Image (cartoon, rainbow, N blue to C red):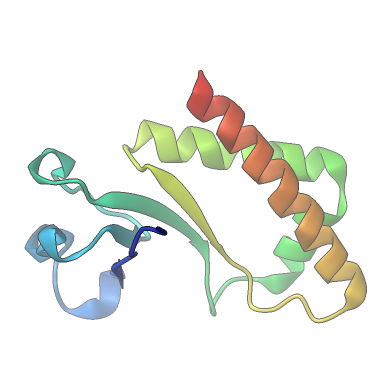
Length: 121
């Protein structure tokens, strides 16, 4: 049976601090930047990259070239690990052409492969 995901999203302008979040309410918590005490329960924290105010041109450029994809993937995994996050969340709003969708597919495939390899090490 699939696991039920109880996701929450916290952002700095929400009016509450990350330390005030009752993480017992979630299985996954999406946080742009946070310092949570994950030892209190089994909450999974995700580093969110992007969002509505992000530069879509940057995402398109990153996703379109192999060397840019690799740099983004390596640095995002390193950033997540060095800050205690369990996983990553990409919020690209929105790839609006077939070419950008293809590039996004390549990026996500390579990212998942790299994350799985890093997680196994």
